[in-house]
Image 1 (cartoon, rainbow, N blue to C red):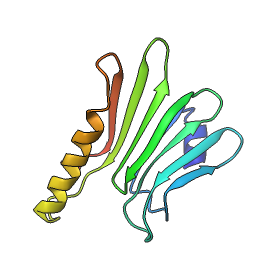
Image 2: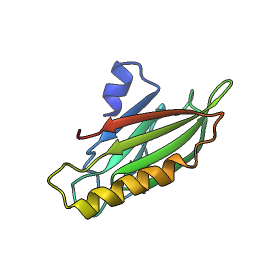
Image 3: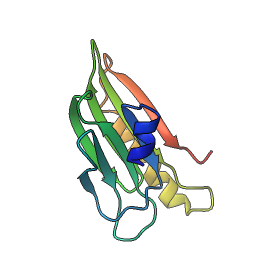
Image 4: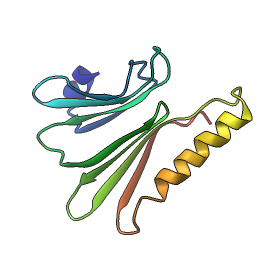
Length: 124
């Protein structure tokens, strides 16, 4: 994944269905860092790969296996990035409702003078 970010010269890359175990940060190499929000099995998971040198990360919250939210210091605005992996329609209604409630809680943390980027697998 880090190699893809390098070869495409990306500063930020969102990952849906990362299938990585556990939540946390992994310094892939000297130039990129991988932030993952996973669980104990190799399923689901979302993450962000960011260029270590050029991106000034203010905060990152690995909310759940389906949502990761980061705030990046931009000029002149702060940029919020929500990486999503929505459940498909064949999941129980309760799980789908919980997912969208979680997304709404995240969105309430974005201030009116900040830019919001929502990306990922919406499973629409």
